[in-house]
Length: 343
Image 1 (cartoon, rainbow, N blue to C red):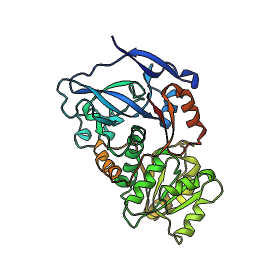
Image 2: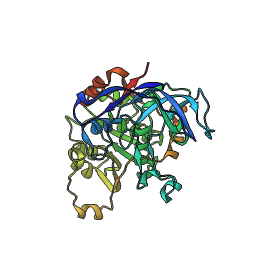
Image 3: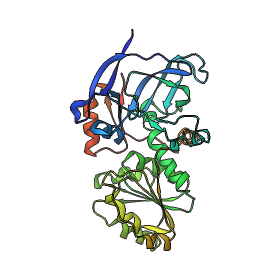
Image 4: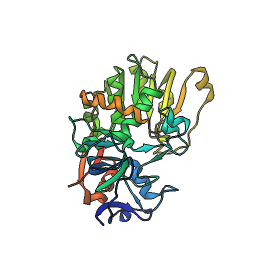
């Protein structure tokens, strides 16, 4: 039986839990294709899975984002042929519930993400339902392709679907150097909004290169005070936040009347205070958001093909250096995505 190498954890913990195992190479079943992975991108989710998320089946292959080449086509699969270059959609629902049927699979009670709820993409080969694949735009490489799906779907859902961005909107995006932040800045600019973003002192120039109108240093500046000055005291129509406790007070102080605060993470803590008087008097909305629908990859990739959006790749590590890649991601020194290249 053919074998392949895969990055797995057998127990939760530190970097020592990352293993490169030789396991059986999968065979595509009905409606599936076999993809040779050429690049995989790391997410903060990979760190959380390694450290310990309840319910993760062990051992598990890590990785939610990947890009590669179709090598085999299973019986009944008709959308792809051998040699096609593809990206992988990282999430899937049951396919039969009302939300799935209406293109809202991220609301499915059985929604799952590759590399968390079942085996992911950090392997030489993966067998996937062809519905999970999207054609890779010809104008980008595999590493950039791998850097797109999870964070751009998340950002699109926050900025476009829930945030209902308009060309006249003023948008604050926290943390331009994160995967979601770098995607959200670009999406908001593509819609013609005025974009204010934040970054650490050493990353300000790279944040400006994304196209933001104003870049603030979240280490040295009072962000809420700066927002008030920049907006004439009005505040922002839309705020994109994935950090939680550390930025919460500044976010709520920076929100305009009728504004929307959309949250997709809580990396600095999850217990916050809300003064309901300000919430209803100012007619504001606080919205939670996770992932996005497969259908949104269509407009995202059209903008990628047009050169208006790009996957931001900070550094590419060889497949065998997975521990170094995790360690680098943990330092927070990256800007954009950390990727693995498959020789």
